[in-house]
Image 1 (cartoon, helix red, strand yellow):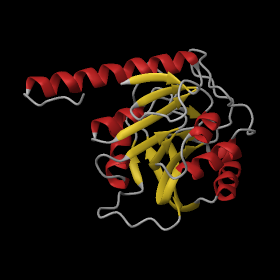
Image 2: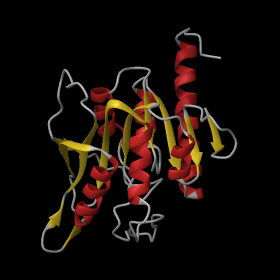
Image 3: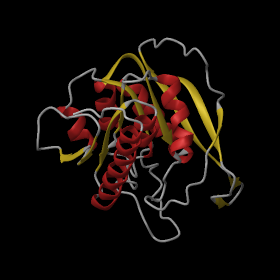
Length: 238
């Protein structure tokens, strides 16, 4: 597994966590080069967790339409993107997706086992739209639109998702060996879900601290996989 910056090479290698602005990175990627996008961007709510951690670009929506347009360009025709979003800014996200060319084809609710905040209601779920470019084929085994969101404790990132919760999406909407992109990869849970289900990945993270944590995490996972293959007598790729 390699880690690089967006300026080191014109053609971006797979199975890597890139440090940089995802709009710049995706603009350098070939069009129609990604099989599935799974991402959890900032929700535009100026989020701050209990320890004071924040997210870059969570205060304004200037990046939203350019990022979704770039995502649409790199996604292959007749493929899907699953994108988490914040319900207080749902109109902004839907406008950005539709302006880019995406078509909403489904909506997931990820139920939590805990309350993340409480005002008029106790907040016990997150949500993601399933968005199509063109007319993707229907999956053989459609997922329920209500999923469990396992609590991670957020050790690496303030909005860290559980790999197991994301792996079901990867398995359903991709085939082994296909490429999963996460333009806002945070702690790289989506990349780990891709790797552990036999897919390739590209992750992009602009915050240096989160990028370092994501890179170290993927290095550890690659190492565990290599050691397991070696112990079973399976040759590792050069």
